[in-house]
Length: 575
Image (cartoon, rainbow, N blue to C red; front, side, top):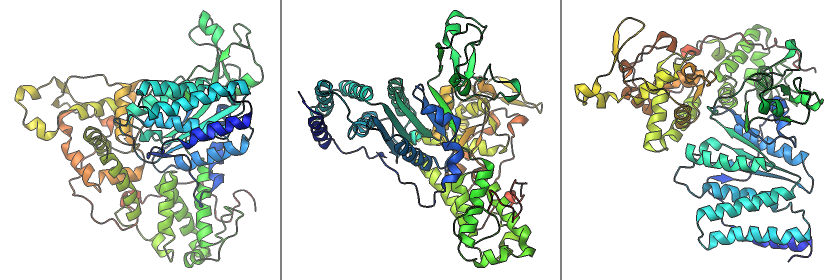
């Protein structure tokens, strides 16, 4: 038995020294890049949802969703840094997992390795316990490592890990876990990991995840019953009266309070109870989308940091002397060129930080405004194409079935209009229809299906209607690796619309820049399903793979939308 805290520390350190190598799919640290501009993230980092998640009463997981290139890893690193700055007590601990590579369903050790890493990070430097508690705790932790050394069954090792983590959480005042890129796990592994994390969250571990994939589960729409009608808004975090819910008082819905009203001690309007309010959910989703004004300031700052003071008042930081382009842009006759440039970057990037930086890097190579004012060529920039190529390579590294599903789903969505997308039930039927090659070789009887009239009055043979599921939608979105999004709430799946995640990627997929997507499109039998006009069916392009990929932007992107940029010379936040 250990008699003092130092002996406990020594015993734990010795156990940690026996720890096996970290799983190659993740690391425990990520340093934000030097060019990270923190004011861009202030709106998200100071959001009500993120602040509510940190409170002691919150037992739910926070899932932060962002498209490819939206800055999820940077966000995770900033959250990690903020937590370590704000919670520095002896009983506080922050653990982090940054996924670097994809994790397949066959990787049986991954979940165990993640939990082992979390245990290591939470307890290595944050042991605060009485001597009589220490012996059992250290023995349990040492047993965890011994099971691995002696080849015990996975279930037994997992039980030991859970027990050790629960003991650790009981001894800490506050414990946080940041997991970045959970979508890199296969759906099966992600589900196993989330189940373990839900159990730990119930024990007090505050878990925040980032993912490209939105959870396709039904979610309640809630409004505070106490706030004035004119100021009510849809709530991400809310409380309900559990006493009324259990007794069936108040009709179908229980009394709902927002976080602010709950903090004020507002009681239930039905039963007058205060103590029975609960958080009726296991997770909350936070969309990692930037405030438009902040994003435009980010673009302005990048232009001024590179080309000198352009009169945009984007930042108080020191600015370099004017570049050749900067000297041109500040001339009175080129005022419109600067406005066009700023709006074009904002429009092309679609509030996506990675796409914005790629477009800005192209601008930084310009020497005069002539390139800004001249009509852009009919191809996407080479670095944008390379960015999307990398995404397609990631899809291609999946299992054959997942790879084909992801590529075909993207090709189908790109076949339709960007704004309207394709209805989920139509997409599901299309993906389940045999490929053109297979269909041609099937017997006539096998190809037959019920005759369904289309909107145009023609007849199309269609396979029997199968109601698609949330599980199937999850599978499609995972296979597409975040390059497809669901526009509508998914409570009614027949209303769900799927589209490509941004307009430039839609151009990339539709205009056949990718040989993989060209193949996927050729495999889809669009004539076999009824695509209605509200699915945005577009005529397929017959062109071959794009070979010229070095110019600026496609002709489809020439229209400059009206932005909210202030005129040059107007302070964004004061001098």
